[in-house]
Amino acid sequence: PQKRKQKQHEIDRLQQQKVSYPAFVHRAIEAIKLACPEADPRVLCDHVEVKDDRWQMAIEGYLGGARFSIIVDEAYEAEAISIIRQLPGRNKKARVIQGSKARRDSELSRRNKNSIIEVLDFSHSTAMVYLTASYGSVLMVDSAEELKSTGRGLTEDGMASGGYSMWHCDTADTELVFGAGARHSALKAKQPELETLTGESQQANYQMLHLARVQDSVRALTNRRHAVTLASIMTEQRE
Image (cartoon, rainbow, N blue to C red; front, top):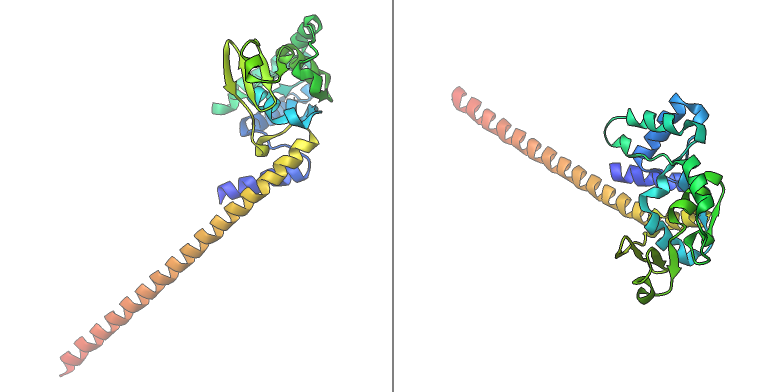
């Protein structure tokens, strides 16, 4: 039931054109809003769109958890991470973007015409400078052969390179978060999952109901046997 409830929540959010953030990100956002509303916390993924659908899964896979980094007003970055530091357990995992530093560094970085930044659109300046400074050197290449000699690279089918290694990094349709098109794809992919969970839940409920009926029948039979035995004993005593 809990998995089904979570999946329904995710679908409801997508139908409202909203992303379901990881729980620790959601809690961090709420904590910052409560303690420092002036920080205006936002999540990176809400301000990025991939213009070329062919690269959507590969780019999101390369960025991974960074897609859920938190953007705040640059004047409140230190305060925001201090608030997160005080949260319990895994909620401390949330990341706050160093917007002011990313802005300075992005101005110094060289843009390559094959950079993944070239196929991204932004609706927030901090999202743009952060991804430019952090991932502007990731190049889109055509093949594994080209990838093997690229410092930081990515192919359309999700092969990646960086740190002198190569790996596979695409993302399932259900996990896409950049842009309205991605949310629509995630919604279509999650609906069959909900149907499966609903069917499993109904089957489990049926089995529990059947078991309850069997238990009731056993109790009734046991009670009848006890009644017959008791009646027999009373008859013998009267005789």
